Image (cartoon, rainbow, N blue to C red):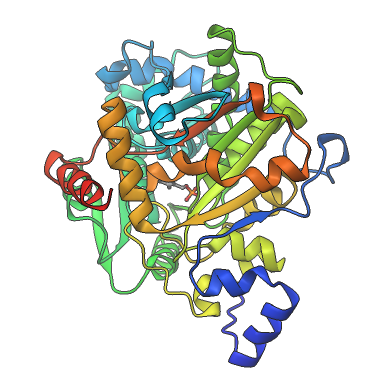
Length: 439
Ligand SMILES: *Cc1c(COP(=O)(O)O)cnc(C)c1O
């Protein structure tokens, strides 16, 4: 890993070359339009195509009988892990009274197993690893009925293997819960400031939780080293994972169906705007990639980052990608939005988002709390602070609409709510009270 910490002179030079950095480094909320955005027929080669997403969807389907068995909360959907798409018209009239298009919430806060968007990427990566091990050992064929993963024989087999992950919280929850359920030895490396309830829940589910001083990037490095020292160890690397990415991308195929069911068409006259809370860039990158495969140039995806953790924004705006962290520029990576508190962007995802993301906006923590409280009051939906970042999207993207001459009259806006349902009630009450005091 290349580590750069810029001198004051170098930072000044950067600000001259990329003026938006002045506001970013002053921690002012910004809206950045991606100058490298490509039309879909002009993109340089991407590592995946739609058929890869479809293969990933088939893997999810093979595992559906297993989920139905092991996670009763997936029984209603026959073992499919998916979240509702709902209209939030009260929120819309409260926040954007003049807005003509539709405003929806994609409720990944309700996703089973992990209560966050990590139930897509994190769970998927462990499934593909478990499946590969079982296939290689000759214990499984792809056309088997996958409830065999519930058997003692499989659990004993997986107990020879260990899985490690470094996490600010939610990724650890998803990897820890599914890995322990399958029978793996799983270790979650967390920074000491990670939320206590997440550590408690993980331990209750049978995962080992190791707490490390310093921030997330250090937790990742330590976890990577210790896991790789075990010949039967597998490390889920949030900073560079194509499996996480593919797991997330499947959301696009599901959303396509949900929009069809609602008779909502997406085309040049009915553009789709999607607002995705962004940490390392894996979940918003994977979903953007998927949506671009499905809806092409008619979908416009935006990432939302905290002013104190604009890792993907700095990586893309400087062109330095994962070679730079926010700390290199003197930004502290301190935010209440623990799902977004990431200083360095994902290598794998960011190289792809470079061509596909329409723009990125940043926002202050207080704004997250305000949105969280307004959503609770207007729609009775409770999110964690990170997950509220998409809700302000429609207000932030006007410069983009103007620049691209888009008529937003018939637009469909989707804020991606990325987490919240596992947050203990008293923590949620604190989030809400804080938001109320700020309105
Ligand atoms: C992880 C997470 C995100 C962002 O996903 P990245 O892959 O880190 O960009 C957003 N919201 C919540 C609640 C998360 O847990």
